[in-house]
Length: 310
Image (cartoon, rainbow, N blue to C red; front, top):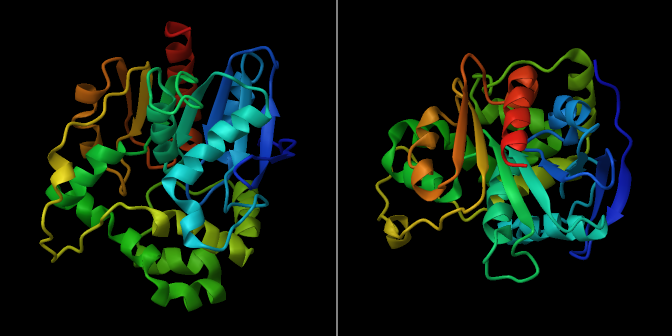
């Protein structure tokens, strides 16, 4: 059992305030950890404990989650704003360069942070500030959109997103919170991943009591431009799906739990073509929440990657 981490309240230039864990030597290389849906900074509890003696480990509760700011409007959760939060967080903590680490939706933002933060990227406030990327079970945004059009397995696995986006379910959320919408979205099928330990589940359920947080979490899905066709839909193929994928020119570790029901291994196809320095660590017998389902495997992969790319 890993106890609570001390958090500090950090005001960002983007207009929100985040509750943030900031552990480890201030002069050590910085790692910024981004959690996904429907969790918190504690997604990374095993990694924070393992790495904070050697690295500065920064793990926010992102906007919309837990005690951090929860803007009401859906537009406040667009990818550009969520990406800008991370650079603003680095600024607020005096961090110039960092390694970005993300899982699930946090991984989606980590892809964006890496692409905008690599050397030569267009925005001079971001370019050159991200040196490495570590992504755990989070699809590459360009490849994922292709899969939603081309791969029936991924399209079927992603139908829950349509439920999350449907505002007709808002009364259900007000009444039963995230647990209610999860039950409807997965229709009696448990989301991929094991059960949290009791103490962690109690923390999570407490976080879910806040209805503003419930809508904040779901607004990440509602603000996303990702098109998830229905299973019986035959939408016209957007031209941008066939455009070249912007390359990511930094050392990148992708950790993939191979038994993820929501994000099957088809998401690994094509990554090597747009990431020249790519390392993939496949984790067999593990569901979606790999940072805490297989912490020793994740920690070993991260250790090796950070040492190789130091």
